[in-house]
Length: 167
Image 1 (cartoon, rainbow, N blue to C red):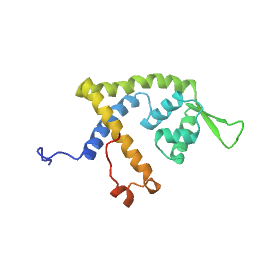
Image 2 (image 1 turned 180 degrees about the vertical axis):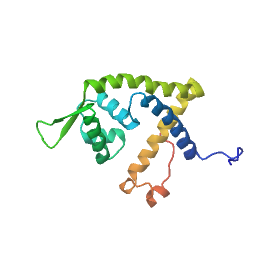
Image 3 (image 1 turned 90 degrees about the vertical axis):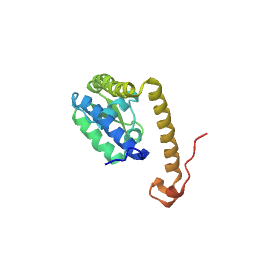
Image 4 (image 1 turned 90 degrees about the horizontal axis):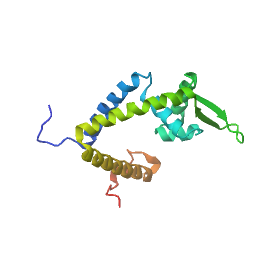
């Protein structure tokens, strides 16, 4: 049982809130027959048609092998197409199909629905403050991760590093 007088660790709060928000978003996506990863890939490719697998993996925050499996599934579902690069045949560009573009238009309301729920819970001003603070935290932690040897969070360099406010 939690002690209400003792503040909860920020990391634990972030995980719980993220899990709850994702659950709400997943419920919206289930109606479209999509997972959160599939939805993110569709939205990314519709915003930047022709991106490579490497670029999609970076956008999704995954490795290329994971992104490749996802792309294969989306191609099988007739949502993506692969087009070989005319200069380097080893490289392929990904494009959304008309079906994916149609789904992307339906994804926007689902994405906004979960945003609206958060805004209703916090109010507009607090939602904007939270977004700003989380963006600042994300950027600071990404900088810290990039500065560590191999980007490994468990490395001694990461554990001893000082995280401070960004200028």
